[in-house]
Amino acid sequence: MATTLSFLSPPSLKTSSFLHHNNVTTFNLRTQSQLIRTCTPMSIKAFSAPTPAPPLTQDDLKKLAAYKAVDYVSSGMVLGLGTGSTAAFVVSRIGELLKSGELKDIIGVPTSKRTQEQAASLGIPLSILDDHPKIDLAIDGADEVDPLLNLVKGRGGALLREKMVEAASAKFVVVVDDTKLVTGLGGSGLAMPVEVVQFCWKYNLVRLQDLFKAEGCDAKLRVDGDGKPYVTDNSNYIVDLYFKTPIKDAGSAGKEISALEGVVEHGLFLDMATAVIVAGKEGVTVQTK
Image (cartoon, rainbow, N blue to C red; front, top):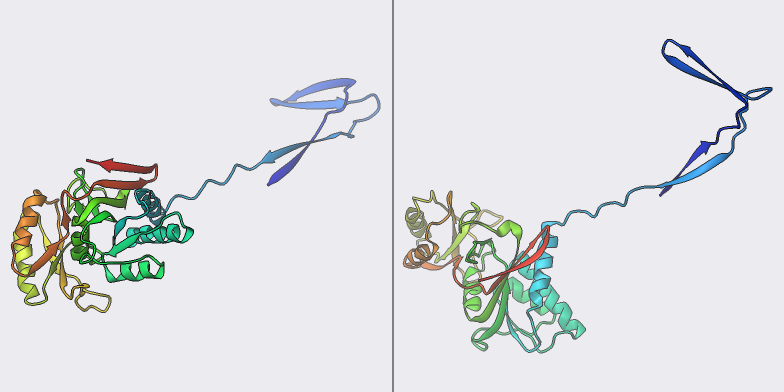
């Protein structure tokens, strides 16, 4: 928006006198007969500064990372389709590219019922590991990423199917925003999930908490919005582990958790990621080992 300011040019002066009273200077400007007050207007246009772009939201960052990950996809691939808010952007983008014809002959192997429903609604052909045991590329989000590209996954409740599909993939690309980066797994203070059978779940909850006393671990049964136990796609429960300090040895921790009878799977995804795409305020970066 332009603003117009008017300035008046001074008249030609014949005489001038300066009167000083109490450190105040008074200017009397006169012509031969009278004070001239007729002036010529001038115009100056001032333009307001452009409005800065709004900061990127967390969803904006997830979408940036997801779109970058889809650059790894080629026609004819069998793809592992992840679960969660970031993976949903990946699935949506693949659907768009199939519809436009930029991608062809894609087969998706979903890691959850909700991903299966989303992909089917977008017209993505789907299969299962039984029929496609070798997957070219899996793309999924993560809840934590450490400097060695080890992950915590499963806060969306799909950790078992995610691990099965991603372990069967030749390449596994992870998409996150920079809030998911940690110095050590468990360091965010948020849940590290363990999927357990429903039978005697409390027995395993206590055993899991005792495993990590040194890390100040607090184990809780995951519940849904109605306060009932959350049930996975595989009809199991989830015990969420909350650490006050990062896990000291994630490899050993994973083995100890898996050794407990009644544990189905845990959310430590170790030595699995091929690349991690990170979206932050400064742009998108790709981390590889």
